[in-house]
Each structure stands twice: as C-alpha cells, then as structure tokens.
Image (cartoon, rainbow, N blue to C red; front, side, top):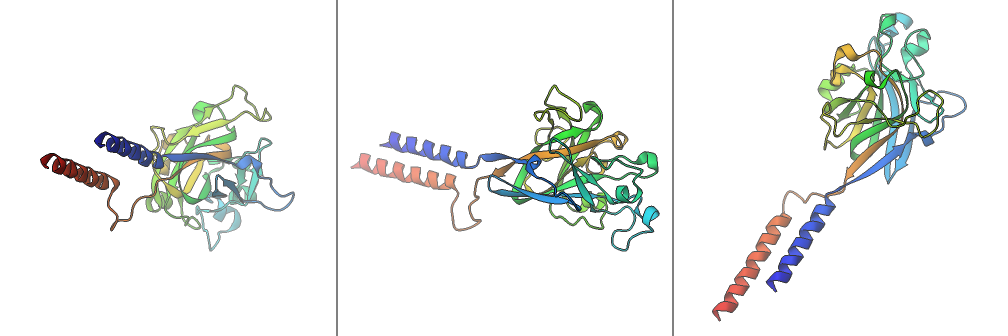
Amino acid sequence: MLLNISKLSIAGLALMSASALASTSYADFSTVTAPSSGNFNSFSVLSNGVTVSVSGWSDTANFSNSEGGNPLTGDDKITEAVDFDQHPLGGWAMTNLDEQNTNTCGYHHSADNLGSDCGYQDFDMFLIEFSEAVNLSSATYAWRLGTTSNNQVTVAALNDTNLEGENWLDVANDQTIASGYSQLENISSTSGYYVNQSTRYLSNFDDNSNSNTTDVYSNFWLVGALNSVFGGNEADEGNDGLKISGVSFSTNTSTPPPATSVPEPTSIMMFGLALVGFAASRRKTK
C-alpha cells in the first residue's frame, strides 16, 4: 500500500514538472507580403496561437537639420519607420525618417546603425509585440551586412512600448527589463544577396553570454543593429545591418497557484504522506 502511494507521488511530481516546461514556437515573417503601393511599416503573424506584431522604429539624428525640426519628435528622437523593404528571401528592412528626407546617407535597404560618415547616426530597431509574455530565444535574418564577425544584434525586453518622442538611452534606462547583444551566425554555407531560400543568418539570445535575457518573459521585445546603450561596445557600432525574417520564442505553460487559499503541491504531498504514516502506525498498535 505504502509502495503504491509512493509511486503515485513520484508520478504526480513528474506531471507537475512537465507542466512547467516551455513550449517553443517560430514566427515566420517571410510569409508576409507587402502591398504593391503605399507605405508599409507594420504587420502581424499568428504562431501557435500567439499573435506577433512587428513595427519599425528609429531615432532621427538628422531630422531637425534636414526638415527644420518637428514638434512631435524633435531632433534625435525615436519615431516610427516610414516604410518596410522586403528582401527576396522574405527578410524585412526599414526606411527611417532621415533616410526618406535625405536619400543620400544611411542605407534604407537594411535595419542598421550606419550613417556616421554623413555626420549623424541612426539606430534602426524592430519592436516585436506578443499577445502573451514570451522569452525571445533567437532571430533569423535573410541578409546581414559585412562579415559575420563584424555584425552584432541588440536584443531588449521591455515593460512598455512608449517609444515615440523618446531617445534610446531613455528607453534603456526607463523601460528595459533585460538587454544584451549577440553575434550573428551563418547557418548556411551559401552567401550573397540573391541566394537559395535555405540561406539564413541566426542570432541566439537566451544562451549568449553577452545577453541577460535568459528566462526573461515579456510581451515587448526590441531587436536591431547594435545599440550600445543596451549593452556592447560603442566602438563596434556603425557597420551592423540586417533584414529580419523571423523569431523563435517560448511561452511558459505553467500556471502559478494563487498567492493565498491554495497550498503548494509540496505541502499537500507532505501532509498526505503524514496521514498515511499516522494510519499505518495506528494499525500496528491495534
């Protein structure tokens, strides 16, 4: 009898442990198609029951010089990207406000941190919003600028999406739960702009020693070219560009018990074993 109860207890523990395991999904952005005309700067996809919404954001380091300033954003303030550009393999880049206005500096065919040779430097970042809190574990790209060893990606978990009119340092200080950066990896032997669909570049976030986002869950994540206010070396900025094609994320399937009224599973099991022991001792004394 006691042996059977012991077996049942072990089985119950195994089930409780299994319920806490995370479920990993991939949101494929390459399946999205931009309209044939007009600006297109946000989209949503559904992955394993989770809605994933993507928008582009950048600061405007040259905006006041090129356009005489703007009451809403001002100089070097974050505003939404004007347009998304799609790589033939499905990855997404962005055209920010400075690039639209000057057409001579930066590189509007990627999400990048270029432009220092023009006297200013913008930082392009994708804001990825999830319908439930997730851990963002990796991202894939259809294209990246330069050699892999010179390309770094910023990742940050946020507690809010208040980006308009802010600057990246304020976001890093006031809205960031955890952040870091990762080196891009080539997961295919093929390289080049127009290449086979299997070509992908990858950045891992959750197990990278330069990232503090392991086991961090949030509804809001930033991914973009290296931005050292979120971590990394400022001297490494200025040569990073990418076109994002998807992200891998995990949801925590465990449901924590209420803070009151319901005992913890361990307490219930210990109490049950105590009752079994008490009953056994009574039978022995009879």
